[in-house]
Length: 165
Image 1 (cartoon, rainbow, N blue to C red):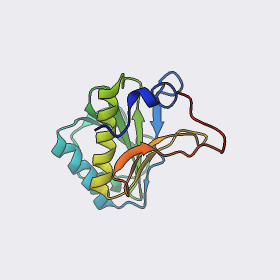
Image 2: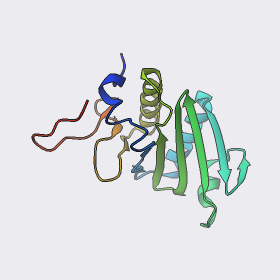
Image 3: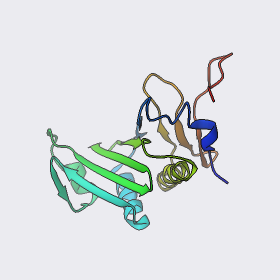
């Protein structure tokens, strides 16, 4: 059974016309070992990936190496496509936070939403942490809930407000 149903969320939460990205707040309090666990997951799952520094595509190096590089204008970025219609971008800014943005522009239906939920859950399970993907302004967002072990909408509407359908 799907974590979320497309018909319940497509028009108001996953509308690419409103915002084609779910910008991640990041997974906080991480270590180099957490980053390496994430990279290992990407490789183990065989997800399509591109590792870019500036305008140069490179082979994916170990997390310790990437995170030891000096700060500069060309920070490393790992783009991952775990399945049709789903793209995620990890930005290597510091060891203590895994920054993640998710592209929802091409989800297109239940299949894409299932891939997204599976991806967020796989990352959360591997890191043993919640994986939030909030939108700017504190509105509704999706995320992997570690306690519930599933992806769900992580937003409580103000009293008297119901999400649009």
